Length: 175
Image (cartoon, rainbow, N blue to C red):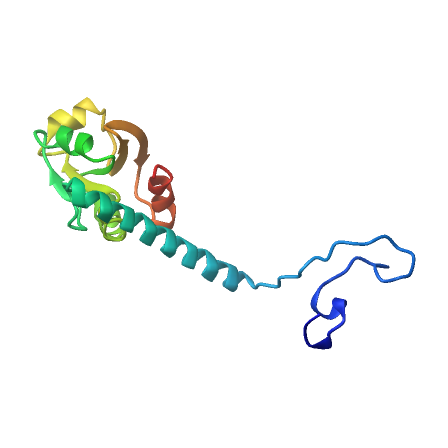
């Protein structure tokens, strides 16, 4: 034991563990972490994983350039939409309109998420008033609608405005 400590000063033992004649027992280390400590640790893990992903993308980018790495959603049109979702392994498209109040609420949320996932997730915005063809093709009847495409296929559809802590996991689950 360290510094002459008895086993139970550093480890928590089952009751009666040190009475003579008992069978050997397993030592269990006690970790006491507050909720804040656990949240901080999760945040550190998340940042580390994100950095690892970015490093992998940067290595890939050297051999095949990514088409959308600006950190801001790309303005899409009926003519650019299809190539955008096919060229990016994970693409998120925000279907919106300038007059839509909830769209104006969710737009900065999408932009913030886009900044954090540069080179990992491609983000685009499609104005449904100016681009009827794609909006009709995907049956957009409520805005904002956010669609997630993986390898050119739609894998999720999110309707309505929501805060980042609700929206981000719905997107990143597809990484």
